[in-house]
Image (cartoon, rainbow, N blue to C red):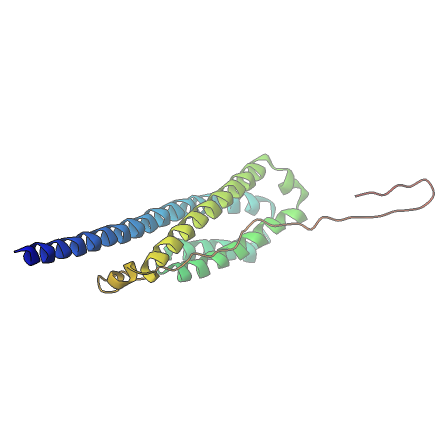
Length: 195
């Protein structure tokens, strides 16, 4: 009789252990899904800003049609991308490159650089990029934690058997154009160093 209780206790402990591991894996997977939805929300925010930015630039740089079309095409491709994070990252990186070209156009058009609407859109885009980067880091941290659970003992014993699969990281570039500071030294009679 004692052996039956001991066996029943061992089975109950193994069942409890499996339940705790399974719930932890589900919780980690759901955290990844939630973090991914945050990334998608921020990307959608960027997609919604781009047409306004393109229209503003179009008014000043209508003959830069090729660049404007490239931005719109990249935006549409990124918006339609719903595959794996690696495929979406590829489409996002193409959009980031097109946005860099669009923002670089402003350097050639002083009136555009001074346009209040353009400046607001540019600031909003920069804020959105910051939010995308924060959401991406949060997602990647959740993916790291989830993948660790899948690979570490003892949860790795159940993860594959229960159909849990690793997630991919989401790596995209920062679309803000970074200018290298220019330093000019003009030493001569009566001059002082300038930056």
